[in-house]
Image (cartoon, rainbow, N blue to C red; front, side, top):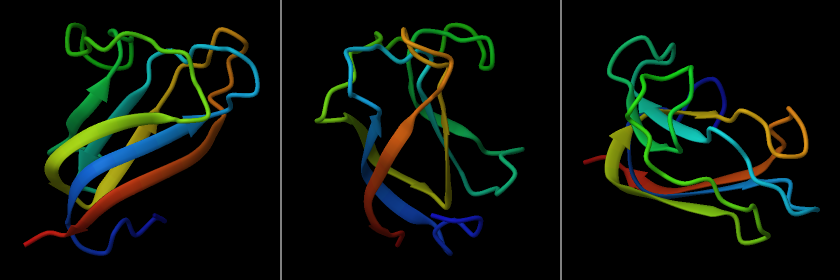
Length: 111
């Protein structure tokens, strides 16, 4: 997905993310957001958030932190419709780097 997003809204079912997993580490503050606005100024929906971080409103994250593995982190998008995705992270137990290595999005054109 480039700056143009999906080109049109998509119905999303699963998102799979990988951070570097060369050593055992936990990534902090992982957040996945959706929007139809390329600037994420309106209609922003958070579909995954670990425990609250300072860059989002407190109390909306309840997912525990997890050890990153070669299997990645599977997020159920539950058919949410969006044109743009945004990913946040606040580093890991090893460094301040976010180290995204791959993101896969599974869905279809919205009907």
